[in-house]
Amino acid sequence: MSAPAHHLDAGLIDELRGRLLESRAVLLQTVTGTDEEMARLEPPEPGDSTDRAASVSIAALISRLGGQDKHELDEIAAALRRMASGTYGLCESCRAPIALPRLRAVPAARFCLACQGAQEARP
Image (cartoon, rainbow, N blue to C red; front, side, top):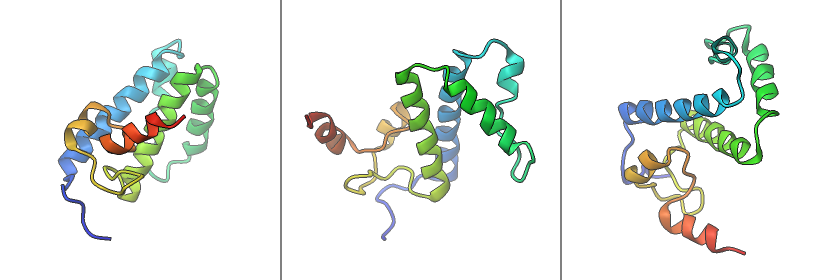
């Protein structure tokens, strides 16, 4: 596969990851009662033995969210996985780079504008 037309350097990836994590924190804050509960959701260091406990806590909180909030959290998680795999910023339909202004506006975007329009036009 050839390199994308625009290159998301490490600084841009960090900026967009920060936006995704901030959005996730806001969504989770809607269902957490305390800052202590939120602090337990901070991602553990790689190889940390609390990985499983954090996953269980997040799963319990997600079960308290409404449908739209769950969908948004799923989209954020998927975007973070795409970042980890190196496919972030590429349209899942046509594989073209997603425009940087779109990624800044919707950091979890899966599709370029043209493909998003086609997705929304489907019955």
